[in-house]
Length: 101
Image (cartoon, rainbow, N blue to C red; front, side, top):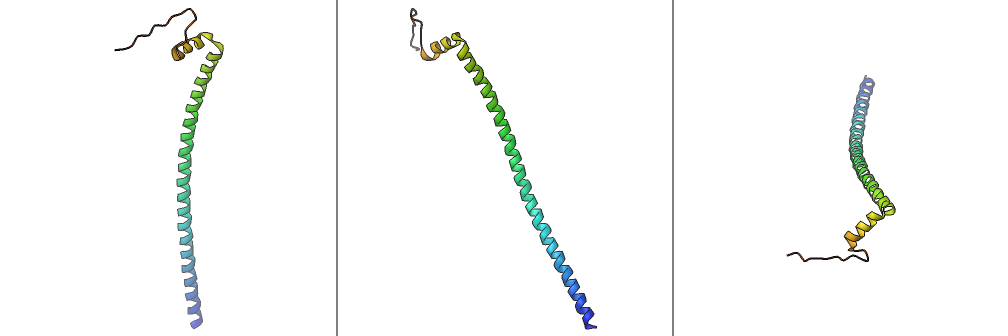
């Protein structure tokens, strides 16, 4: 009679141990999954930021390419820039400058 009680106690102990082990594994996997989800959300946000940045840079590249094309092909644009930024003038031209008050 003592033997069935011992077996019964061992079975109950084993079941409790298995349930506790399962609980620990479940809690651990949930916490790992939560941290991986946060990491995924962070990288998803970064990807969106990089895509926006890439779009902005692509727009700037198009603008600069168009400006470069004008500089290479249109002599009037080069002359206008030289006059405005570098204060160049034609050989037969005089430039008058007045001080502001």
